[in-house]
Image 1 (cartoon, helix red, strand yellow):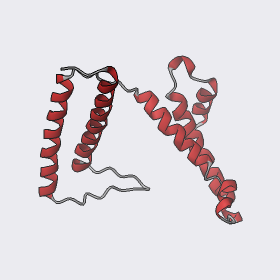
Image 2 (cartoon, rainbow, N blue to C red; image 1 turned 90 degrees about the vertical axis):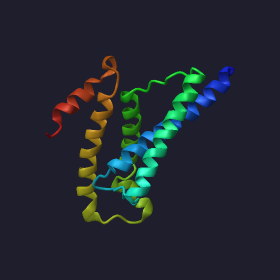
Image 3 (cartoon, one colour; image 1 turned 120 degrees about the vertical axis):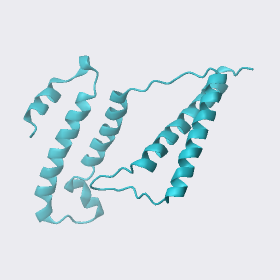
Image 4 (cartoon, helix red, strand yellow; image 1 turned 90 degrees about the horizontal axis):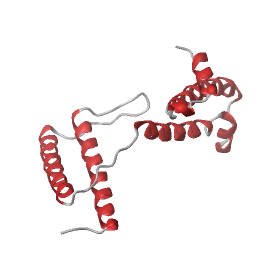
Amino acid sequence: MGLNEAQERSVAVTLERLEKTLALADRLLDHPESGRMWQMALDLDDDHRAQLHSLRATAQTLLVDIADAYRLPVTEESVRQHLAGALATSWANLEDVRPTKLSRYGAVDPAAVTPLDAALEQLIQVVFVMVTLCQPPDELSSRGASMRAELPT
């Protein structure tokens, strides 16, 4: 029993996405994540959490069985590239909430312009350095290194 290349890729991508979802479910069921601006509410009772853990383990076993039976390849993802992409998107989003751009939603209180822009600039600089640090070592820019040296600790 075999799959052609396109079929193999389709099955592999689908199983990979499911496996990532199962890993996320496992983490969230045990340790919901949160930050200052968001919070995951653990709104499942202990019985449902236990059932979900058990079903997650069953799904993982079935997934591994399929992947092994069809000798599906393991996809290696770069932490560096993943972080660089996510941080670059955040950087662009931060640029889009500068006071000059917020005016598309209405007049911005003049008293908020300078402090908000200064705070955003500082955050943008930190995110920029993080993006720079995620570049391959041979591509690190001197600008990123100099900006890193200027950042508050």
